[in-house]
Image (cartoon, rainbow over all chains, first blue to last red; front, top):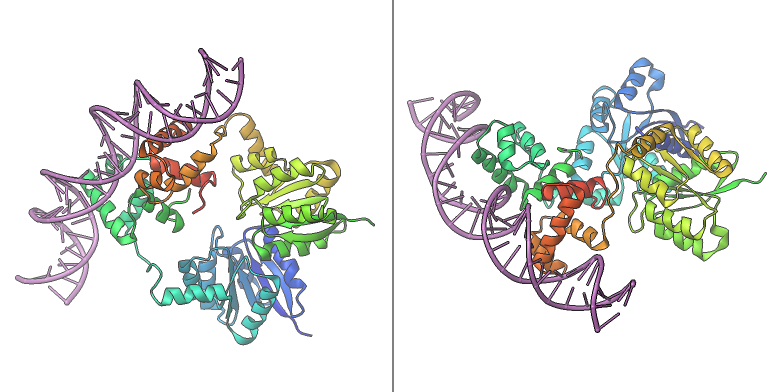
Length: 214
Length: 214
DNA sequence: AAATGAAAAGGTGTTTTTCCTGTATAAATA
DNA sequence: TATTTATACAGGAAAAACACCTTTTCATTT
């Protein structure tokens, strides 16, 4: 019987090895190799055609080259390779970004072994799969119920990072060589833009959107 | 050959199953069952003596009852059961808290399959194990380089969680059925205790120490 | 019964934040 | 050229946040 070939990409060695072990127990799948990040994967792909799998199981948060960037690259260069995202990040924005990048399936790490097997099969054979929870997220997002993706300007991002420190706005103004009143402006705009009430709201937004990493 | 029995505790079903599959490939180990959180583990332990394993592989960040609390419980009630912590959280405080709670080993999720196997064996047979990286963290911590662990009271913890929301102190007071002045007091005490300047400092402390998980 | 100590609350004053409504100016765009 | 657009800045008022110091209340200990 011909098995589908799979590749696992996750920066946590233990997890990628564990998942590899598990996928190898599936009837229809065989793991070719595992990678620590997107760059390693690209290296593998470009070094030999034998390294091109049927499906890539891709984590999102990885150092060097993350899952979204790696997926974009695969979509561009190896369109026949299916990418199934695998992550604990179940917020709308991440799911959407991953699907936009070309991922054909999205699995949350809290799903079941059988769901993974079923998902892998559906992905390679029918070309689409994702869990119910993800479907819900998608629908929410498409129906506009979720917070629309706000794009922050460079200057606003800089301010946000300072806002996550214990500095007063006065101090931030000094640091950014701006008048305190300008800083007031940034703050007010961001409050409206991000729909938050106060500085704690800003901080939380920054953390959730990885603008500031604690 | 008698195998050592192991239990995996991780809120990510897929990961606990994957690790279980992997541990089952180890010569000397057999997985009894997996759990989603500390509470489930306690239920298992108390429901039947057959459910008491030789070793518990414990994740730290879990809903309901986290790894530290669960480890404390095991140390208290089933002292003969070894606990090996397994987490991506490699900051000093977490490692220390886990070891203080009674964990006998600490593995970072980015270690290797073979290291896990070796670690499990050393833990059940010699009673101690941890990776080099953890040793370094420990040494740093013991040499006083890291911030000393401040213990917060239950009430203060509750307040901290509210402080991480967009509520004003007045609103927090209402929610906690206390006078705004009392809340002022909590805030002032925590500012001193945690050595922070303002509410952003509180929020950051809460996040870094997993008092509040965004 | 007196002392201790923690938790809760009050008083008072200062500083910072928040929320308005405006103005100015250079650069990009229609 | 006219018109957005982004950026920088102001004044003033009200609301929170912050700081510090005192008092009450109540349970535990001596």
